Amino acid sequence: MNTFAIDRLHAREILDSRGRPTVWAECRLASGARGAASVPSGASTGRAEACELRDGEPSRYRGLGCRRAVANVNTVLHDGVRGRTFATQAEFDGVLQLLDGTPNLGRLGANAVLAASLAFARAVAAQRGVPLYRHFADLAGLPLRTLPRLTVNLFSGGKHAGEQAALQDVLLAPVAVQNTDEGLAAVVAVYQCAADLILRKYGQRLLRADEGGLAPDFPNAEAMLADAVEAIAAAGYKVGTGMALAVDVASSHFQRDGLYHLGGKPLTSAGMIDQIADWVRRYPLVSVEDGLAEEDWANWPALRTRLAGHSLTLGDDFLCTQPERIRRAIAAGAANALLLKVNQVGTLTGAAQAAALAREAGWKVVVSARSGETEDDWLADLAVGWGADFIKVGSITQSERLAKYNRLLAIEAETALPLAG
Ligand code: PGA
Ligand code: ZN
Image (cartoon, rainbow, N blue to C red; front, side, top):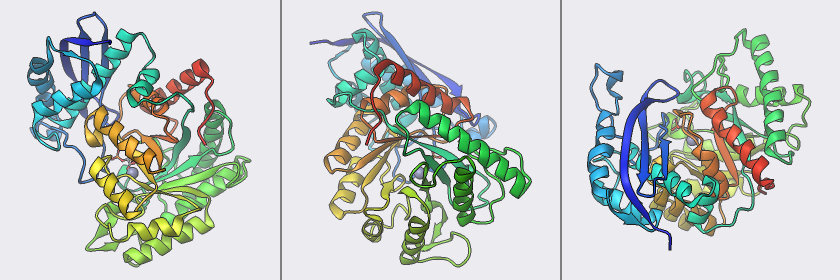
């Protein structure tokens, strides 16, 4: 059996796509193999997420510094694993978790722990002499069968933009294409038509939100959907069968006192479900993410039932990539798709467990980036290795997003795997 002896764990503070600090770490093995990785960070976060450690020094990066998390990698984590030999990722992650000692990784920081977990995976792939996507597939015990389908941010609202409209993302889903290469070309064509439309309609040049989505002064959520359909048609694609849509409602962020403040009259949970069902009837939505708030457990099953056969009921903040929440949602019939963000749970092993639960329940898996990203591209390898049905990386205009798309193109060229579904 292959084993992996740790020589050194080492971290640094770097900046993410919002100019906020995050953690980069490198793992060196005794064999001389090494791997490095950077962790992303969210803005529209769920309450059950693993806990990022931030310095809280107001005079430096408004308190968002990661020097303490970095120091934790360089001391506690390094000291805890140096000279030890591991046979598996699960064993390595188990030790990281023990060294932290809290359920949400709040002591050393989920950002510190995940940087170490990912760096170890890259170093092991290097020692094994296999591409990272193959290593991820082996970790999950899965064959390499398909590449994820794209869902690409077109319009942004909510917390990723100026909250001008409550809907967080309207995404393009190139459902008719045969490969990633065609998918990207189609998405870029629609994005360009959408940019023209925004200039004409709102008199605004390309004002981009955190993930590169267009973010003009939409009067309301409905306008975001209607404008997306108009842009698809303007680009010459058949609305629905040629190019479909997905939405991230991110509704936890506009629910207060049990009511949804989508704009106009506040909606009850039942009213919110009616609103979403109406959108799904009138727009080609293949997936609805966080249609209800993260603690609105009682109403998620009704949402799933209403959308069944038309659109996926996808849980992001609702599930937070946490195995216990996913188990509970499966038992309740509360969703049928998992948005998987590794830093919501803090280790590759936790994320693998989450993905396995979803797959066993027959759910779809959407591997997702965060709104604060880095130029690291491990997410593309993860989505391929774990056989994700979809990948959600943001828009096509910023290099922290393109790093992942370009990596997918490289994997596609190398493997010639077909798209999922
Ligand atoms: P994030 O949100 O800002 O937490 O990364 C992305 C999403 O809601 O999908
Ligand atoms: Zn989301």
